[in-house]
Amino acid sequence: NAAISSCEKGSAWETALQLFQVMALNKVESDTISFSAAISACKKAGEWQRALQLLRSMVQNEVELDTTACSAAISACEEGGEWEVALQFFSVMAQNDLELDTNTLSAAVAACKQGCEWEKALELVSDMAQSVVE
Image (cartoon, rainbow, N blue to C red; front, top):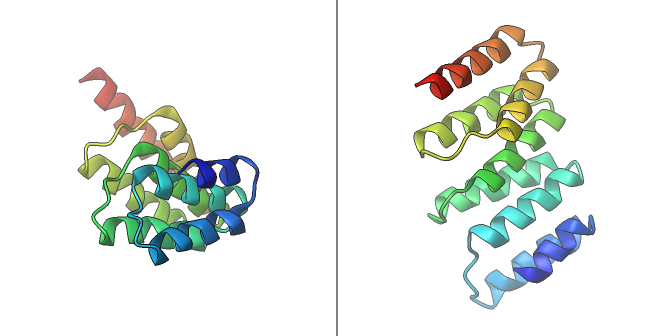
């Protein structure tokens, strides 16, 4: 996990993915931290499709989702112009009772902006404001 996190911080996404694959080959179980670091590394490199593959893998392997991984995936979608996918992950976060923080909301709104979906962006902000009031 520490090595993957270091790669993520050093913008070495390819190395992060190689380490991630080595873990699997050596039957070392990937956890939330390793997935989150690999997803963040891909996001920072603009490799949004790989980030989404990792998040889907996380779900398939029943690894516990966290705010960091989902927020990074939403940001990756925004950078890739995939606003609909970003909103799907935003919904998944809400369904799994994950914290929807300002970074997550900002990423989802930015994804809507990329897709010229300002009505969806307003809806997200309104829903978030309503949940804070409740």
